[in-house]
Image 1 (tube, one colour):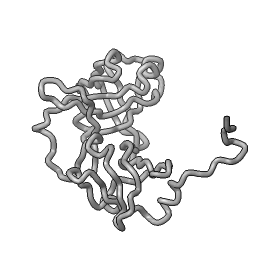
Image 2 (cartoon, rainbow, N blue to C red):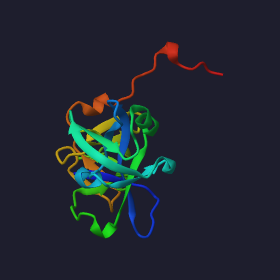
Image 3 (spheres, rainbow, N blue to C red):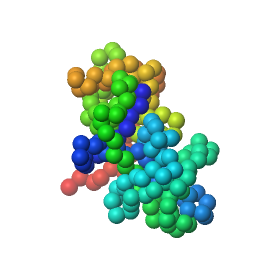
Image 4 (spheres, helix red, strand yellow):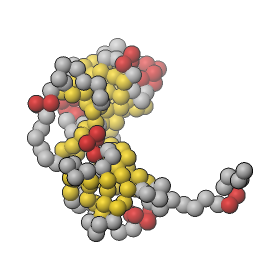
Length: 198
């Protein structure tokens, strides 16, 4: 199961996908770590690939080279020569325009916007909250589920824990591992930290 995020900014029938986010500088030669938000990094971050940016004034950026080091993607961009230049690009979202007709037909792939806002219920029928956002970790995607009690539940988006996604019905069916729900319960604030009334 996998996701890609898209923005509302579409042009000429293309779908604009968020494929990554620039992180910290890596070394002093203008390389940047990138948080990958695509299932096809080899294509999206190939040398010569041109990526749009959010905010737009920071791009477009052309990939000069890329490699994986320590489980992280490290990219260099044309015209970004040193650590200071990379730091100015930190937290920039990287976007790619894709023809929707060329998207994979894999039924287990979703866009973030399809999943965010869906109701979450357990396999035994308990309403657990709403998918607030998708979190793209280095190993796997996670549901960030806002619980009715105000807590947050982070659940790996894998078939073992998410046996069903019903877009038409507006819900996802989940089977979280034992003990995970208790961890998402909000802690009671201490009396010293509570706001005075009045």
